[in-house]
Image (tube, rainbow, N blue to C red; front, top):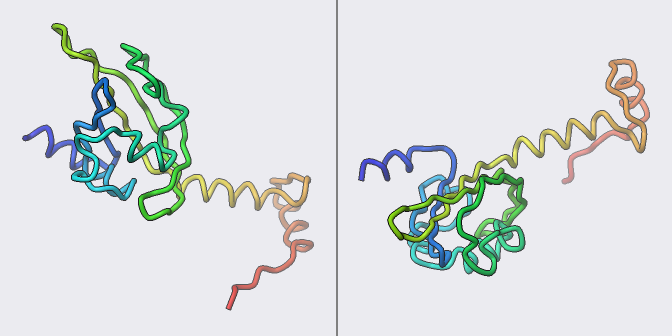
Length: 154
């Protein structure tokens, strides 16, 4: 119970599934990031829920069968929340050997990086004008002079 409280206090989403992709643990941050409640995912095949959104799917090494022990891998994933909102997450996945003949389980950490990616893209766009790139203040002034003004939509 104490471990579940600790996991629920994290900002990163954590979920664990078994060798049959049945979700065994889904913390509060995973709920917030994906839009799915713990009750909706626990005991279900993670691909039924999270695979449809793009969170796993073709990149998942558990797509077909249990691959046994996996080395840790990380990837940035674009997916849609339960409500269809476009999100970006950094995902780190590794397997856990449970020992004494017990099957392997997989633990995944998801970190919402949507705002960071959006700001990075805006900054990159600010430094570009058509196919020209300029980061110096004088170039930024030139870009600002020739860039059409942005007006809010009414």
